[in-house]
Each structure stands twice: as structure tokens, then as C-alpha cells.
Length: 88
Image (tube, rainbow, N blue to C red):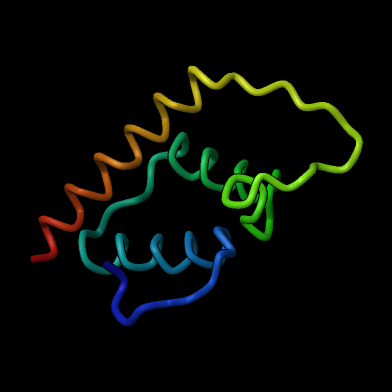
């Protein structure tokens, strides 16, 4: 969607590239809820390995609202599909 394949798992860098694409191609700002969701996942798992490999997370406990997270991820997925369709 953003051009050549980028082989990184840093959501912050990917988000920054995505945000520029949306501003350049559609002259639109990313909704704050979308940005906050992506950046919160990045803050929680900056190397994007916890959810891929099920690694241990230090010794702290985290309370996640999985229901809300699922709703937001589903909305983000729909947005990506719509953007992809608009680019092609």
C-alpha cells in the first residue's frame, strides 16, 4: 500500500509513512482513535514480537480490554481495505 515492501516491524515508523501517504494521496488526517490505537500497540510492544511469538512480557501485569481492542483492530482493517481499493 505504501510503495515498495518495507521489512520492519516498528509500528511507529510504519505509521509515520502511512500518515504521510494518506495526507499526500487523499489530503486527509488520520483519525485520532486510529493513531492512538497503533501507537499504543507500539508502546506496549515496540519490536512487535509479543503477539507474533508469544514471548514473556517482563514481570508486570497488564489489563487489556480485548473487546475494545478487537473492535478497533476490525475498524483499522476495514480502513486499510478501503484505502487499498482507493489506490488501485
